[in-house]
Image (cartoon, rainbow, N blue to C red; front, side):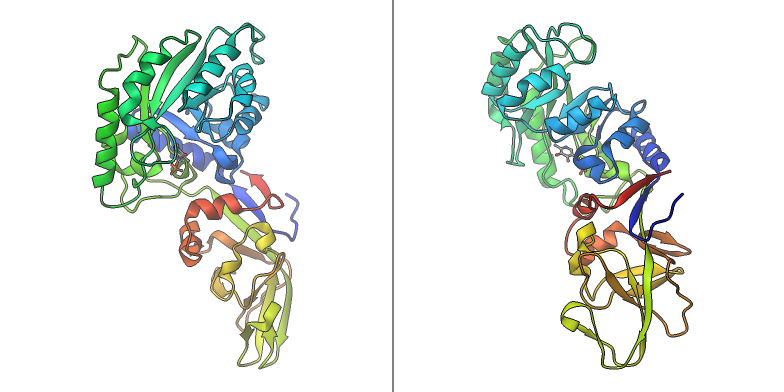
Length: 375
Ligand SMILES: *Cc1c(COP(=O)(O)O)cnc(C)c1O
């Protein structure tokens, strides 16, 4: 492998596979593997490739993300999690994506778009489109009101080129210890689907659980679970019944080492001044790579298996860290931003806590310029 001095991410796809298998074994339900936002920075196509035999369905956030998977040859059903504008209906049908709908206008436009259209995958005429129905049970960002579900489903029966394959809702507080609002949402969900009859093949099937619910709230599992973060080995909730392994390691290299005199300041604004002669190293990563600038004077990295403090402000491309005077750190030495080195480890969770955000944001902000290397 060619080593470059800039930061790169190493992704262990087998760990993602193992996480998916562990989740399936624990839940014993269909698995809808969420690979939106480029699989939380892990690479949607690569992740889908290693999960296509394990996942019953993939889920993405946008039609474009679905098309990317189709063009890469992924043939599993692909759920688009959020309702789209009606100008995407032709692509949804031709690429055989499964839209989630929560309004009548989109439903009728999809029904019309089926007519006379060929599948781009099989070059045969398409007869009907599978859709999922999103119910708002309290998240209040999408879905039809839970009290209107029966009427909506009755109306859907009149659109005979659509087949209601799934019914879903999304939980607002599954990652919290107190499950009372989750229970209320589950009650609302169950009451709204009470009268729905399933076909012999189990359609429509019901799915609710995000990662937190998948690993910690069995009552939310229904017919399929829909985890994202957990696939990548990160726990969204503090209690869980499944063992997961993180799949991503973010590395860079030392690009400069120097001694500076007592009283010198470091990086823009000289916000860190050293009180004695200090050995420092520059590493090639910055906020231009998605490394959070709010780790300035706060974060740590690993070099030679030892934690090193970030000194001064993180720049767009370079970050400075403190060394011990006796350290043998040289240009080209490996630096861990996220991951393990020797016995030491820096987790995505640690970085999220220090920067007052969530692991999701840290992962999805890892920039385009950071090369992904797969094992
Ligand atoms: C993102 C998303 C998920 C997955 O959430 P995780 O917390 O990553 O498991 C599931 N369902 C919907 C509707 C989502 O938007």
